[in-house]
Image (cartoon, rainbow, N blue to C red; front, side, top):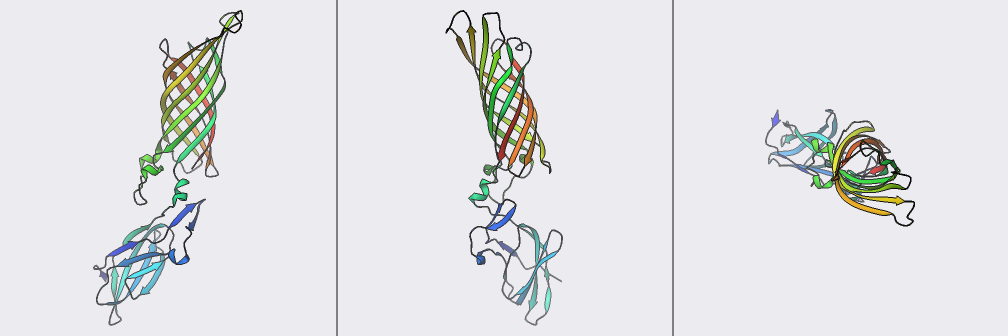
Length: 297
């Protein structure tokens, strides 16, 4: 027999924090680490039976109480609960329907700091100029790049509460801010003149990332920004008369990379991008290879 008049209310009075794959309480006394369930009392009931099962349909809690509240300890997860009623004649009347519920983690500030989905990278790029810019310049020989990014699905802005989580398609997308500097040695125009190039980039990227269960994932990235270039002409016959021309131009790029994650927080990324700097005279096209290391928190 089922009792349909019992309404189950859920109250969570425990704070649980996840860190380094382990659960621990947030500096609370032992008595405060409990979870409380309550339901509407029935006037003719003298006792209640409580049964809780996990997602594998295994009974994880059973108890008999005289009031319409019960406290227990269970780890975060999905459960179902039902309440049985015993009347004043000490007769078991029947069970309520199963009610689904979920115990959620309520993270402290410390917990959020390790689950923001923010990535910090630093590394070295290598540029291979394409025709027609391959003629005046050699490929890059010194450079560095750095970026900071976040995943839409993990970033705290997209998780306004513990009960409202965006775990769908946003988990695969993110945004980055990127900057760097690269030096290029010029080829000689003649026996007297050659030209070097110093390039500073600052911009942003959108990316889509796979979400495999193993440490290697792939990233498609597209973005753009501002390229600040200094062209320095060197002459051998006029000492001290080097001439530097500066230009600021938009750039855009797209590419693929592979990311290897290890020890939970650390990662290495390697990839290649097709990049175009939109100079007024002619677009500067290049292939940009990069190797970066970083952390994700």
